[in-house]
Length: 191
Image (cartoon, rainbow, N blue to C red; front, top):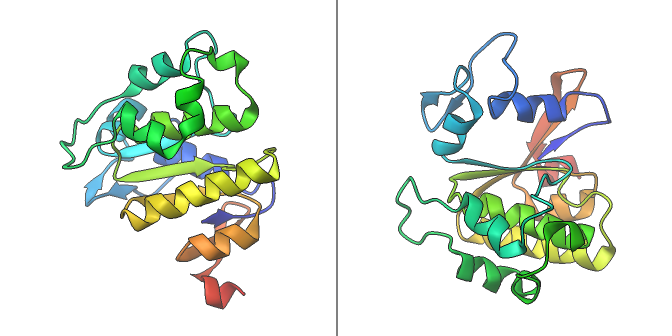
């Protein structure tokens, strides 16, 4: 996890990792390769999937169209994410597959944003404000999904304010303050 108060640099860190902002110094390596000078589309091709704050789904496309618009297995994953597999993870999306993105609830939009990132078949998925503003039942469904993804071996970097599920799900936590890591450790150490 990446934790901290508003304005401390969490989203800036994510944007920098994703190639949406240039780093002011240092390097960013992913899977042993420097990615800090790469544009965002290349960072994604290296295997980094993003579920951005605000979701950024296509409002005028159907659920199904949103999903197939980003589907790609460029890294040739052995058990790739497919639309069918996403529908198994989030059955509600299959029920709503013909609905426009604009007609989904906030929770359904978040499920769609997670699914779109999964369909890029990433090695790492980054979720910025994973459950912000969602109803408790939907939050629980998202946390269950993240635990499933973790069990499958997908690396996850999660930003959220709900400490209980974060402590149960994540292995390591980083607290950022004014753009610097103020503390890092395991869930047990954090408790």
